[in-house]
Amino acid sequence: MSESAFIDTFSAHAVSSSQEKEWKPVLLKILSGFLLLFVLAECAFYFVFIPMTARIHVSVHGSIGTGSDEIRSIAGITGQERWITFDTASAAATLAANPLFESVVVEKKFPDKIIVTVIPRNPVAVAFGTVNGRTVPLEIDRSGVVFRIGHCDVDTRLPLITGLSFDQPVAGMRLHSRLKPLLKDLAEIERNNPTLISSISEIKVEEKTHGGYDLVLYPVHTPVRVRTDKALNQDRLQYMMLVLDVVQDLALDIDEIDIRAGTVAYRLKGEQL
Picture 1 (cartoon, rainbow, N blue to C red):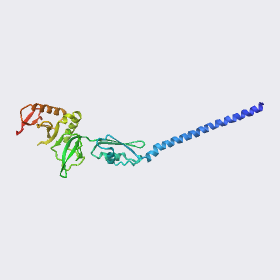
Picture 2 (cartoon, helix red, strand yellow):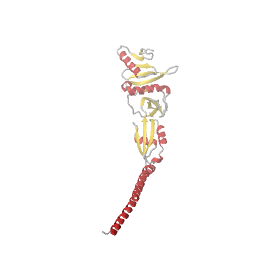
Picture 3 (cartoon, rainbow, N blue to C red):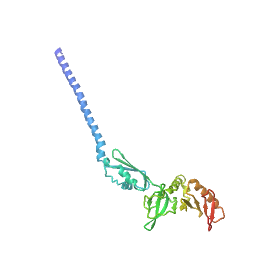
Picture 4 (cartoon, rainbow, N blue to C red):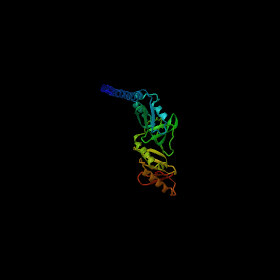
């Protein structure tokens, strides 16, 4: 090959290599641009399009005795709402206004989830009230809230509270604040020793002449009732059961036992205590 031909060939390769070096950055920029556009489109779809257009997906947690569909209905959630415009505060307020629930939390989870968490009220006692001339059961929780009327789907171990008047009761009404200690005691005993609370069928609240009240307890397995003060903790109930075991061995027709003073007094049938 002549020197001239060699120089021409070398020049042609140099030009080709130079053009290739010029196109590589351009091609890389084009590919990077397409990739960036793709990522931006994905982000726009995920962060903008879905929240603005997707219908909400509702998840309900914590409900006991109340179905998910019923909770959604109470909250006014149809499932057709858009996530971006869904009002969690309004839904939570609507649910919290229902006496069935002790607490309510409604949260949004990106991009289309609505999480509803409810803590239902649990009954610690049952009472009876009068509605339009009919006697109906009432369920009462530890805070003294009458949260369900007319339907008593509860454990039969729960004690019946008597001595209180419920005329035309409404769900959501509250018992007098002075009864809260009694209801809290019942909730604690039920949680720690349910067998003990099931030994009492009825708790009668008797008003004192000068204010306050006493409790008259009706045990399940004996006709002897027990009078005590308003403190009704686990120790007091265990002491009461011990006393009942003792008096059952006595050949006496005992009608009532009084343990208010820390000592035991009893009244025979037909006598005044």
